[in-house]
Amino acid sequence: MSAPAIPHHIAIVMDGNGRWATRRFLPRVAGHKQGVESLRRCVRACAVRGVRVLTVFAFSSENWNRPRDEVSGLMDLLAGALAREVPRLSADGVRLHFVGERSGLSERIAAGLAKAEQETAVNERLVLNVCFNYGGRWDIAQAAASLAARGEPLTEANLHGAMALAHVPDPDLVVRTGGEQRLSNFLLWQSAYSELFFSERLWPDFDEAALDEAIAAFARRERRFGQTSAQVADAAGQPDRRQPA
Ligand code: IPE
Ligand code: IPE
Ligand code: MG
Image (cartoon, rainbow, N blue to C red; front, side, top):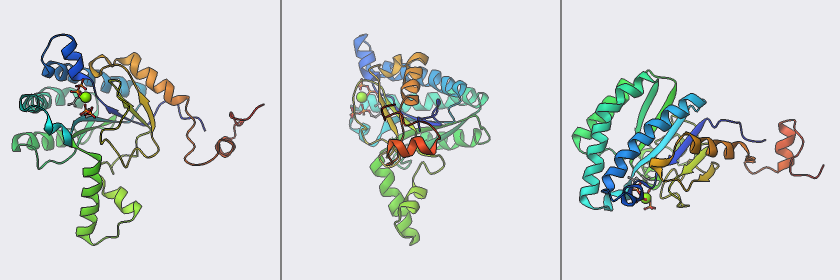
């Protein structure tokens, strides 16, 4: 079956902010600031196109290893964005979830995340998962630990249900901007059958046209989930596009 025209769930590694800034002789934090603008544009564009879930990687478990001023700049940016963006997102029908280890964050930030989630909880147009202080390995380990604490068996289904993204289906399309072709500890469990798309664009330059390019590439993919092309075509009542006519 060829993929539907619009993915239900898109996940994005928003990479390249630092290079965007450095190329303009600006401090790296200026690139992160521009990255917030790019995210706002992307959320709107996804909602307009009928994408129902957008998951973005904003700060990884490993990003604590960056210079202290960049880390504190990112924390300040998050605090500012919470204050400024949440009313706008809510007006656009966006429901926010923050995904990641909260205990590593300051009380002020953690309280801001919880408030933003509460304030947007009734919205239904688009779910926006912001992965912050998140790592795919952290997620698998926390899911296993919570099952063990409840005395539940570590089955695939139980683990899936205990993951931080259990409230949404797995991503159909995982995009990484900035030219690197790696996952960097993003959605290790949930991306098992996602289509991958790597864009050379730096995240602040990832505009509607770049999003449409990723979606168009997705629509051309054949998702087989382990089956043969013939089986997939048969189930969809379509001719097998991999066989000679
Ligand atoms: C991604 O952009 C944002 C975060 C990791 C917070 P980078 O800051 O990694 O940008 P580059 O890769 O250095 O250009
Ligand atoms: C991944 O980007 C994390 C985010 C986009 C938040 P990085 O820039 O941290 O990844 P590496 O270090 O190049 O693998
Ligand atoms: Mg990077």
